[in-house]
Every structure is written in structure tokens, then in C-alpha cells.
Image (cartoon, rainbow, N blue to C red; front, top):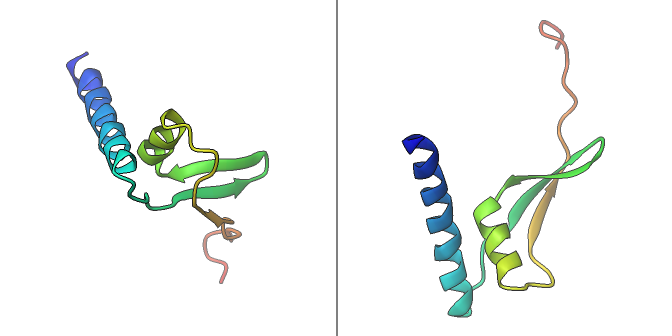
Length: 76
């Protein structure tokens, strides 16, 4: 279990860092959302997103993306 606790420690430190930035009035980089058939998924920015939620942010900046259509291997 030490590996798991290290991951959580790393995650909490990241959230804490972004909470400190928000407390100083700094703007966080946008998160990345990717459109999927069932809705939007968070692809990058989980630390920032959690910090924004903990800080009570009503809105946040995000890049929105759509995945490219995949072609079968060998098809150009």
C-alpha cells in the first residue's frame, strides 16, 4: 500500500498548490475536456479542477476537444 499512499500524497500536494494560487488571486491554466458519446470527460487538469471546486468557483476555463475519427490500421 505505500505506492497508493504516495499517489494520494502527490495528488493532495497538487491540489494544495493550486488552492494556494487561487488564494493569491492567480488564474489557473484551463482544464481539458474531451467530448465522448456519453458526455464530456476530464482529460487533463484534475488537480486544478478539484482545487476550483474546493474554492467554490462557479466557473472555470476549459479547452474543449473532440476525438479524431480513428481509421482501421492500414487504411490511409
